[in-house]
Length: 310
Image 1: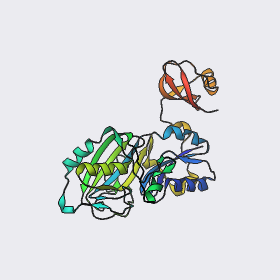
Image 2: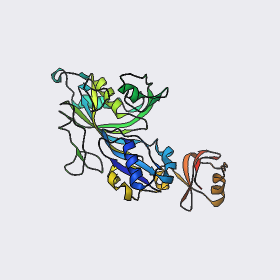
Image 3: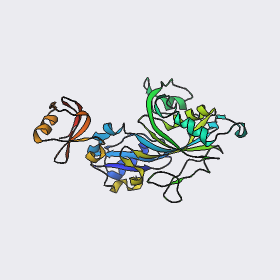
Image 4: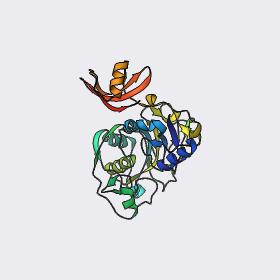
């Protein structure tokens, strides 16, 4: 059964999208490979029926985004949900492209990041967002993340002035291409338009907060579009209303690992949970005559089954 790349609309939770997909596909077995906030749009990868087996291997895929970082105003949610609780007078500071580029460059690489209070992280059995909505706050430890690249596409007087139409090949502003709907802005704030490539677990809302702090002002995420998850690009995604008829991709095409083409004996041993000899190192997909056999980890001596398919 298929893996389907969906273009998530604004103001829907990832769970909302899963529920609609369940109705449209006529099945309860639908999962996704990485949450997208309600005020964000773009790539949400759904796994349907037996394809839910591959979710665990896709949750750690790297992701690309277009992010509109609005400077001079902070919000509890770190995005445009609001309300504005911190602000700086517009004439009291300024930022130019050179300073913005230097600031963004300092965030590239492995680092620690504190997640937003309004997030689904659980501490002591409590969701952080539930505590935050009740007026409380949870001590969220910083997490290890990796930011692969941050490219400044422009500095604008406000999110309203920033581009919303992009070339879907290289995701740069263009007169024609894909046009995105952003949340209603909370005011007129200078905005950085950033193309970001990040590792799993990175919060772009936290990045917006931290970039603002590095520039000496509060900040929030005025808009966010996810343009890639693993090998899936937003240009190939289907609208939510077309999920019911979408062909999608088979499990094997969805797994972004090197492939080992096995013989009958090796495939049988892996399906039996055995550890056949192999000089392969790292995670691989094993196939037999084009069919998926297993996902394995190799240590240079043996293959260890992570998950097998009958």
